[in-house]
Amino acid sequence: IVQEVKLKVSELTGLPARCISLNRSAKPCPEDEPVRMDDVFDVNDQRLQALGPFALVTTSFTDADFIFPKNRMSLPECGSSTLGMRKEALRDDAGKDLASALSTWPLSLVLGPLSKVTLSKEERELVGIPQTAEYFGWLYPASLDWRRVNNDALNIANPEVDMVSKGGFLYLDKGCNLLSAR
Image 1: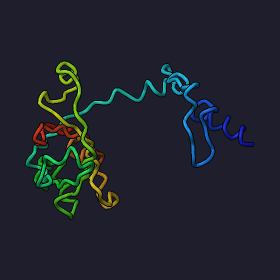
Image 2: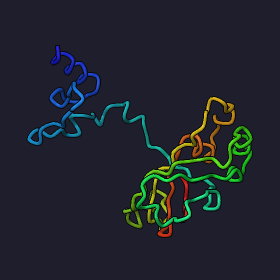
Image 3: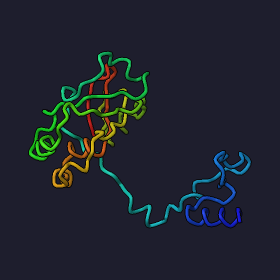
């Protein structure tokens, strides 16, 4: 039965059956049998082709829109941090609609651990990362009961509303000042 289950999981996930463990102490494939990416993904699979590319749209958020921890310079070492977002950060009509639907201000948002930006000048330009960015991190969506927010306020193409409701990347300079939010 175990082998049958492994084969079915393999069929559903595309992972080789030899790499599937049915217990909590799952182990990776033996090093002498590494999993190749083409064992896992068929790069010609139309489902994968339809996933992207994804555009990162720059928001109008500025450093002043957020309430950072007092010691910003500790951000790169401290892992996740909680930031506040001021109500005034949602400036346009769509943002104001969302702001009026929310009762708690400032919003509390979690910034995941920061990583160093390691792209070249050319690569940064190509993907829209500020040249002076030293760090980037994922800003998680606001922790709210989103069921209480009118869907009309969320179902519009608005970069600021999307960042608050879905998350996005923050790019910071060496002093941990916000350069860009995408």
